[in-house]
Image 1: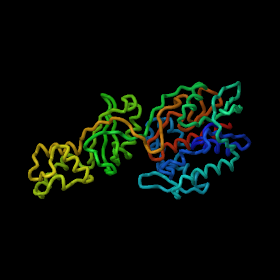
Image 2 (image 1 turned 30 degrees about the vertical axis):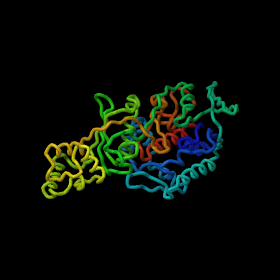
Image 3 (image 1 turned 180 degrees about the vertical axis):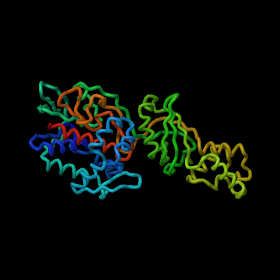
Length: 401
């Protein structure tokens, strides 16, 4: 088995447990396994998401949801929770549905996987980078970077989004959807956002024009950063628009409604009421809507309302411009930023070439695939780990049959 990440470990454990008479060897190129598990969720490990209906769960995957529908009926988020609980790791659910170990320590999850692998008899080889794989009659010949050769009758490729993993899959007959980044922040250079780093809006509605005739929408929390915008709504939008944004060199038009919970007429009435009741107050200094005051000040200035302008002096033209800015502000995305230390890609092995009942290759007998080497990616919130657990488990169960 190639790849000592979430999918590789889960696959190896499942294979060794279901087929105890088989010899299971897990090869990992790095000296430390489970690196993404250890850094995920800010070091707490967002194991999965508390969405226990497969039909709803698949809706969180910009690519791969259809293929995962049947797979999730065989092993879904509830099964992940039970699997870890049976091995002494209890998960807790946060307000947004993300599930973490109660210890808030990703080491708890990594240690659990290491212990489960050891108890199941998995042989773990670290620093064992695979340089090439060839199919020879009824077995695979794996050539390691060290020069060693390993023979195997079955092979699980769970190499993540590494170029070497894609190269191995391609050499064994698979087509690779070109990998491009997913889950990233937006770079924006805009005076309206200057000096607002750290300001958060609990719910905003974003609309991104990905092509001349296509737009994408997402709602949720938004965080203003030194380089532009981040937060769950932005990350989800980046995932759904990953390919289109890549094709446009990460340049796109973005509209922001900072107050999606208020319809335009209600908002207009509320602003007129303030104008009537507090005529002598400065507009910029009295924010009557549920957005941070510093953002309100920037938006009023952006539409030409001077800091000393009082509500009584606010013209209808300025009021209309302010309404437009609050509900339909136009911005330009000029690039992408990074999402912490985690890196998710869309792209990988073409899903039509994989049997999602067993994760067996349709192109190469004896080959199984799991995790991020596949053209599957989810939005932020534990969904990428869940696809790794599911595909790894199904591959491990089937590989010894």
